[in-house]
Length: 201
Image (cartoon, rainbow, N blue to C red; front, side, top):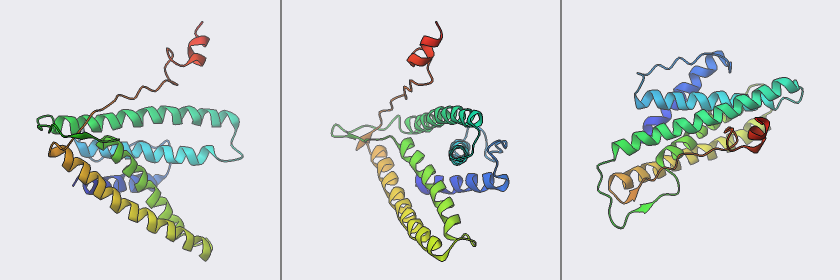
């Protein structure tokens, strides 16, 4: 099952990142380039770096110039994240290209890769909530509250495993079909963002 296959790869990426725990560290992807494992690891690494960008930019004492630089890094990271989701969807489209879609087949509200994207973020939530639930210097009340939240996240993980498996099984059986829309983000495009194209004049 794909979700159960992907989740440990996400966990490995998160663990590897936290060895150095620096948003500027290089990515050392242990998987063969071109493999789905490589892509899943790379996808989560982008999510993990962006998670920490978001932490840093919320520092109330951050220098405004540094904050603007981080905002631009977050924008660039979002674009990479979207591209990688589309690469993962391309994997599924190729894998199931010969499936005979039934006349009664329905379309899902999101593609398999966008569901996997949410699973990658959930892996990060679980990692960091577990840290808080076990943080020695925190109060007992804080740890207890975080443990409650962690339990909910773990329950959500099991539900996502089930729902992603059901979606992929439905696609395999022709009961659902994939229709992928290339993300048309406008704010980074000099032809579509009025702030950017007006500055070109």
